[in-house]
Length: 162
Image (cartoon, rainbow, N blue to C red; front, side, top):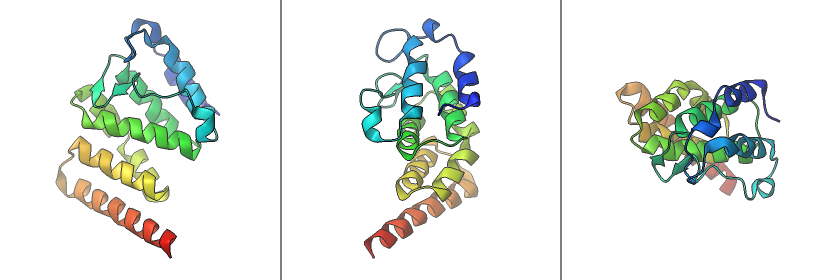
């Protein structure tokens, strides 16, 4: 399901006026987001990815800042674990880049990300810890949460082995 918040965020952008990582305009991104967000399984996402559209490695494009806002709005609601994984992975690459506007968008949603990392799967916790590290947030709070997330990964992984 695509939430009203995500639909609103998608609707406020003129995607056709933005360049996409694939070289075309970004007007196909709303459909990509919808396919990802409505997929219950990874199989349902085959052929729908944000890689090479929103980011290529750590390279970003004019469509990336509004895409980050869409991702953060999606993560604030209920989405399937596979969709959450795809969105978090995209943020991980974006946060590793040097685009200040994109990184600022990720930082604005830090509490949402920390909540996901502290309540989600071990993979979610690891990805959120990597996002925090990639953002290069300073201070005791950042180090505290990164350590807490990494400990959560260890504990959840250890529990599965037992």
